[in-house]
Image 1 (cartoon, rainbow, N blue to C red):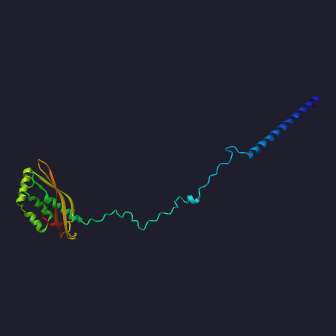
Image 2 (cartoon, one colour):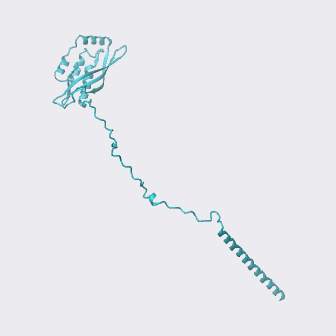
Image 3 (cartoon, one colour):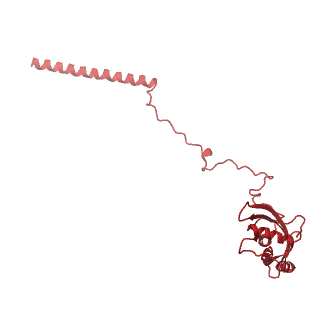
Length: 226
């Protein structure tokens, strides 16, 4: 029994020592926690940073609240220069078309073999775009000596004379076109192409007087400067 009592005493002393050690460790832990609470906290131990929501005044409903710039009362409307001013020298489209066709027929010649037979063939073709006395004159016209000499020169060199109309406009000083009458000035390029030798070009013009007939078609009725 004495040994048993001694062992029990030793066991009680060991238990007491364990309690004391546990108390000491607890005290040390509390001291450490208190020390950390008063000093700087480790990085990352703090709370997460707050995200500030954007102001409703700045965001609004997604639209720019900046007031639009007021248009100046003196500002010209957009596109005001898109439509050009009408050309006062322009003639009506039907007049332009007939003037081009007449001039091309009247000034073109072909002295190559098997083509025109005389200088006056051009006048016969132009008569299709003329009316009244002018049409009659063109159908019966006989060229004078100057025309005959010109034709002989072309025939000898087998020249083809072609016309390129450059512009049709109202002659200077002519009255504005009306519903049934108009003047026109035709500027054209005359090109002489011989079978051999150099090609020659020149710029020519002719003034025409046109009238609209009962059928509504326009015809050339005079050559004021010819």
